[in-house]
Image 1 (cartoon, rainbow, N blue to C red):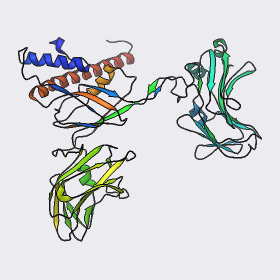
Image 2: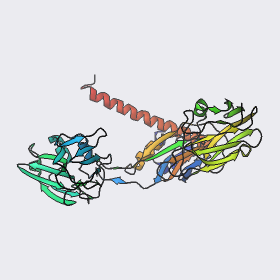
Image 3: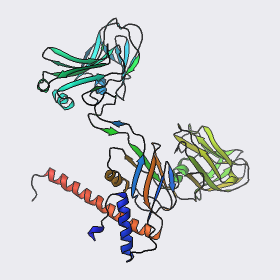
Image 4: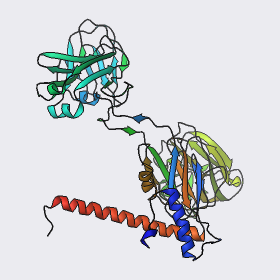
Length: 460
């Protein structure tokens, strides 16, 4: 049976699973071969999934690829190794001859101030010999600053009484050559610095230094010569996006009392306008992560008179939608900049009780049947990963019975293969999960054995 261990490639896996299904039924013309299916979209819901691993995933999204060509590591300047006439401020910025210099996290450098520089000043970082040899090689060096500036930024090699520099004081592009033989000596020093010259006019701007030996000089952040790309994060839930247990544990009530029952709440008003808390400023409010620009539905079962209202709020403030409780549903769409939503249910009449049960929050314009909340599962992928690597991560993510919601943070079109909620789908899904678990155990065992072998010089 070893030939039936399942490979980590989506479509091939599906073909193998169908062969296994035929094998299990001892028939090559099995009429009930309803095992798996494909679903796709931006943020979408699968309504016929089983409790099984995802098979495979493809994602189409824009991602900024970083080549690793940037040699200027501005973060080094946050802790200078030497300098004169500068002051490091409490907020991490630097005062330099009357100018304020801020080293930004993305590797850019912001200069603020006005008038003339009041005195010569600088601060620098000098690389160790080992750091230098790891970062650069002999040959041509190039600069491509986006703007000139004062104070100015410089990257230079100081060797044998000479200085080879790439600065943006007068020009943005420059080049010099330096040999590997010279770099191999400790006397060849690699230094980056920010310098202010007395009398020059301060130029407020944000500088993006680009020092490179490869590529065309397009600016990119420093990644220590390692290629990378922006990751796409996928979150997988069941159909329910409301964590009811968290909501009932923290939710407070105004002008009444609450009894949390039947996946909802029984509200008894002690005065008019009783409602559950919703304002972001209140500590007893559940902040539900928003799904921007995607229609969602909040639904419930209601016992009580008309005239009571259910609201959904943008970040606990602006109303996104409202509906009479007797409608038992409302639809809303969060704006692009919305990070979380809140909601409230209410009872307007003193000395009365109303009941909201089976509260359900789901993606889409149609309310789904109530189901309990399933903990979020997340994975991150990027375009530098192979299909095999992506699917090995994906296949550790479980879909849910009967509904699975798949969301992503990159406005990506995603396609997944999954096991269906059918007899064969659930049966073969179990086989597939067992194989994924086995492969994981094998990898863990390999890692353990490798670690053990490196910790011991001999095996008795």
